[in-house]
Image 1 (spheres, rainbow, N blue to C red):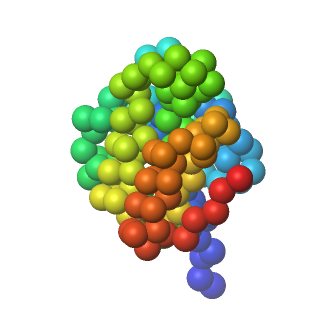
Image 2: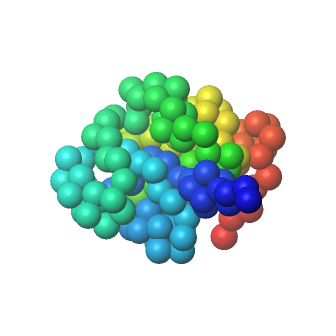
Length: 153
């Protein structure tokens, strides 16, 4: 009798900007395996590892080669790349002040990783205000140009 492949060989997630694991925890709780989380903040290691039990990489996403992220997926057939870029640059406080926050570029870095890794599924979570900024339209257009179907709310 042939063995039935585990869910982790079919679908799995790498969470970029994982923070303290809010999204990863929810994915894991719903039965979707999370292979790794990546975040620059060392304080995120403990909650991520405790709540998800996956590899934590303390790295700056803007300097992280996409092939390292791609390698985290191994032989998974449906690769999900999750990204929750820091929301502060897109919050009402920052945009009302018209402050230039260098973290805006992290959404562009996420797009770079998507275009180089080419996961089957991409998911992004952020503050509602993001969809009213020109950067959001650019992000969606870039995903569509890369062949992805998009939906958001």
